Image (spheres, rainbow, N blue to C red):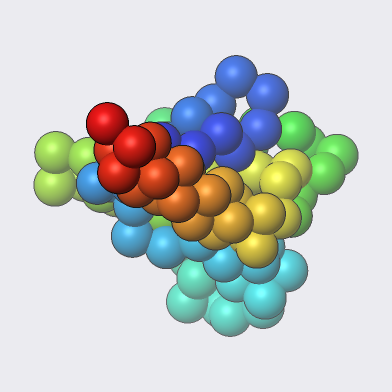
Length: 94
């Protein structure tokens, strides 16, 4: 299943490890080191430099990637839940 996370970005739930509030995530020095490492390896995407509401950590082919999104973590989570609800109801009607 997929969810829109801002602008032209969509993520696949099979790759999803974490959705978290950005401000809470960066309050940890360990997390800041992780982000710096991902940035140095070109595995960090910041969708909007002016608006950072959530961070999404993905595992793709055994490697970690991070996306900083202007969409809140709760909104992204709801999009996944709504997608599941829609698909389940659609399949039940068939």
